[in-house]
Image (cartoon, rainbow, N blue to C red; front, side, top):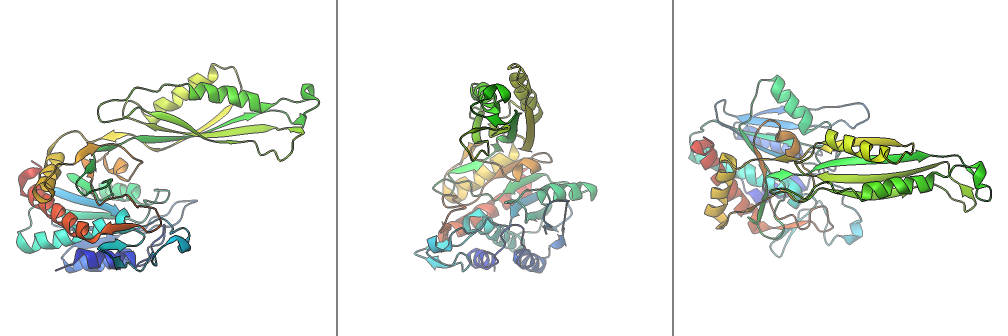
Length: 382
């Protein structure tokens, strides 16, 4: 039988920093094909982005179709001298597995593969099980899950429910699952002026005070007061750039950046319109560029939440807090096609130096996933 800890170690030893595949998908494909999965590699590319390799694996053709989604790509290791161990050696010290991707999220992938093998060995397959594994979650998220979901739609494949193996637990396994996420909007606000000498302001047009007035309007916006399961939306100024290296020149341009994390009371398009209405009221010429990296979503209470809750109670003796905190994940894309919940390992050290997880937690997570499969494919999804 597959040892989830050993498989996690093998995956960590693949240095798959986005967008490199580095053998991680090859390893998963070989492992899953031995279990009877039909595997398809889905490489995608787009202008201005790196090519990304992805893996879709499915066993069974019936319903319900339960999917596990995840990513094998990891963030860079940062300063090597800060690590206690080689970040890609996957060493176990004092009951903890160290390495880039241990928490986010190769440990969870290994746990699900091991759980699936156990399920298939013990139970006649009812319905279908699939894995949707991308190499583009930590990057621009252009050639990964989005493109894979489009491919699935074109192939006529539908998913009934999905768990994403993100490290959702702050301190202890079973503490938290994510049933939604806030959306994210990035804005670049630019005000142009006329460059000139500071001693002759009448011959120039200083854009800095104008930008400051516009930013004050944005900073005073109260977007909402929150909603059920969502904290209030917030707008945060992230940078102000003039690019002026001298003290005696009025600059020709001033620019600022900001981000809005918004709950399900808003859409990206609605916030874009609100921002422009607010800025237009100042009577100052400006340019605003807005990009939406993800819309807010919320998976309503239903069968998937009940299945995961029962599995956590059975294995861990607790029901997780159903949360929407934190940043974004690929669940924001999957939410458009089926109910989705994120649940994985403890994420206290994800993206940090000395990323690590308890070895015992990998095995316990595999037990949770096994209980999910038993319940979901045994009628729990309805």
